[in-house]
Amino acid sequence: MNIDNLRGQIDVIDQKLIDLFKDRMQITLEIAKYKKASGMPVFDVARERSLLHRVSERAGSEFEIYMRVFFSMLMDVSRSYQHKFLAEASKLSATIQKAVEQTPQLFPEKALVACQGMEGAYSQYACEKLFTLPDIMYFSSFEGVLQSVRNGLCRYGVLPIENSTAGSVNQIYDLLQHHDVKIVRTARIQVAHTLLVNKGVKLADVKEIISHEQALAQCSIFLAGLKNVKITVCENTAAAAQKVAESKRKDFAAISSKACSEIYGLSVIGDGVQNNDGNYTRFICISNELEIYPGANRTSFMMVIPHKPGALYRVLVRFYALGMNLVKLESRPIPGRTFEFMFYFDVESPVYSPALIQLIGELESSIEDFRYLGSYSEMV
Image (tube, rainbow, N blue to C red; front, side):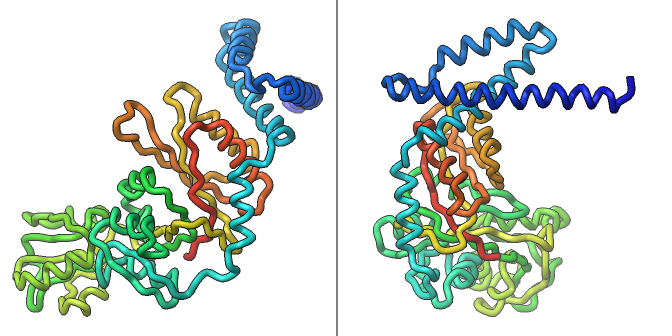
């Protein structure tokens, strides 16, 4: 028998599976309607466990695992289909719709914005990319930025969330667990690091280099090539440049931006010392209020997923079933809660998409600790 004949047999079986699948989905929907009308819970854990046990036994040892996976996915897809018809509009969906309608058509040009760092820090450049005429208030810590937004001192805050070379800024993800803020826009900033020194200093003279830990990680290849040089971490790249300038030392250098050489009167002895010329940092703009501006095509969630087999899969399959493009997944441990993690998801989809609204409704109703962080567009 040749391959065309074998594929023909597969096609016949596939058509039978399609017909059976449609019949099964319709019956599960009728069962869900009956349960809802009778006040019975739609999701029956015992029934699902019994079904998986039964199909595993019938499949035999060779196909047992595959059959459990197949039916687990089938039941998750069934629940998604049931939710589409049975779920009432969630409060969160209504809140999102209201924000879409009430948010101004244009992102504000002027605002009081909180940033971590000081003049010359990359957060300043991100702020100036997001706003035409920002009034920037600097804070010494990321916590200070979040607190200023939460207590109403600043309307917006700008924070780094990830770097293309060094990865996620974990501290920001940890802080988002404790501060109820919303993401209203993001921006990508090209990062080009330089090695700055006081006038007359040469590379051979340098015995200590200072910068922010993310910047140091982004320049790891350059730093690895230096011998007998101490690496020191400080709060941000602009502060590193300032410390070198104020020290007057002839063996001290900072990894910072070229702009900081002009601000603090330093010389550039190493240009483009980052590992990758395509190095960028992504910044989030946060607000106390939910603001969804036109063109919002990215949405962020955070949720606690139970620590048991298949729990994460059951969330991910919802994205797949609804055709959602998941562009980022991050997990962070929850302090004081053993083996529990907060998961962060970024999904690429217009906020106006019915599939996104359905996804939000499903997650809100099925995940005990679920938070919507906002829908927004990204400036590149």
